[in-house]
Amino acid sequence: MGYAKSHLARSFSYLLLALLLVGLGGLSITPSWADPQGRLRQKKEELEGERRRLEVINERERDLARQLNNTQADLQLSREAYQEAIASLQKAKTRLANIQTRLKTATVQYKNSQRVLGKRLREIYMHGDVGYLVVLLGAQSFSDFIDQAHFLSLIIAQDQQLLEQVHALKEELETKRVQAEYTVREIADLTQAQANRVAQLEGIEAKRSQLLADTRRQRDSLSSHVSELENSTLALEDEIQRTISYNQIMTGPTSQRAGSRVWGTGQYLTPTQGPITSPFGYRVHPIFGTLRFHTGIDIGAYSGDPILAADSGVVIDAGWMGGYGNCLIIDHGGGYSTLYAHCSQLFVTYGQGVTKGQQVAAVGSTGNSTGPHLHFEVRINGEPVDPLGFI
Image (cartoon, rainbow, N blue to C red):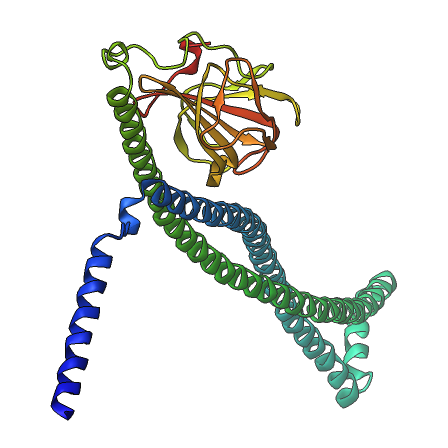
């Protein structure tokens, strides 16, 4: 009895497993790699995030470049001031050396004058007035006596005057020496301060140069990644576009398979009124500052201005598309499609049919945009072409 129950339980388990396998075999499980639209949205979201990062890095690079330029300007002024201080210090030292030389000469003269005058005074002290009296008595006449007396008095007076002059000069030079030494110390301190300032600014310059170099390497790496994402996004868009076009041709009437356009007339109208502010082709990106291929044209307009369908067709995408902002794509058949980006509002949804001239959106500045405008693209089998050849 126990064996029968066990056998029955095992049989029931096998049956349940078989039913599950059969049921799973009938399920339609779609892996993520089989959903190109989902992959495209993921890539566009990643691309938008990397573009925002790149914009931040570009702004940081510009700020560091401004800081480095200011530091280099300050460094140049400080170096000039340092050189001027060195020149002033050299002049002050030269002036001090001249004063010291003159002071040394004056000191020697003063000592010599002191010695001459001291010798005369010692002679007067030791011999009294006898020596002078001998000189005077040796006169040949009274007039000669007067001349000799006058001559002796002049010699003594001159010795005294010379001593006083040399002493005054010595004191003057001593004062100038003290002042010159003070000036030299002041200028030396100023020169050292300027040298310290130069060294400080050189350190700042080196750090900011390194930061700027690191930021530029980071920018280049991220810019390369953004370009890779852009290329892979475009490739996926082309793949989707080719799939759509192939499906339309294969499911349409025989005449459509022959290559005639589905739905659209092939004659496009201008989707909004305004001047063309950026043409099709290579340009310097207004936000990222790098040379990029512009896959459409920009039409300047006011926010809220109507955007019209350039031709009849079916909306194959409508919603947020990363840097495009609010965006929609209309398939006109035969591999032709148009794209309308940066919209403030979308008035149509995925799968909706539209007619030529119908308002499908409103002008805005969503996504990577510097102001209200319409970014308009025309693609043939996924390849962007110049819209001016169609409108």
